Image (cartoon, rainbow, N blue to C red; front, side, top):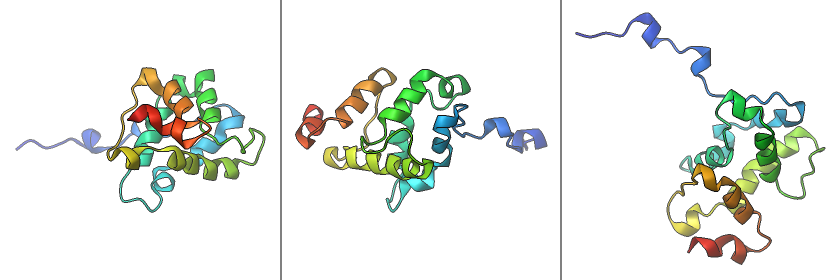
Length: 137
């Protein structure tokens, strides 16, 4: 019988995912967790969308890049200024994702290719509902 060794069964801290930006301006993203993104939903589709839109947010060099900081800024509603309190950003981020998500309209979870992240965020930030959803159908 094959059994795992203690080292194979142990989860190392380096294996645990957590977005940790070094910029003090973006420390609020650490407080956004899967439970907050899931909310009252029955699935994790909003969390999946968030991870797709946070370009390179899963690796250290990505989180420390100016591109990541720009993505965070674009994924907040216009009425949330960069200088506002972090808790406002934490609460506005899932709301913005939920309000601009097209999962229900399309009837399935969407996949955003890495090269299309900026286009997807631009589509979500369109000023009218028609402009946000027309390209999808």
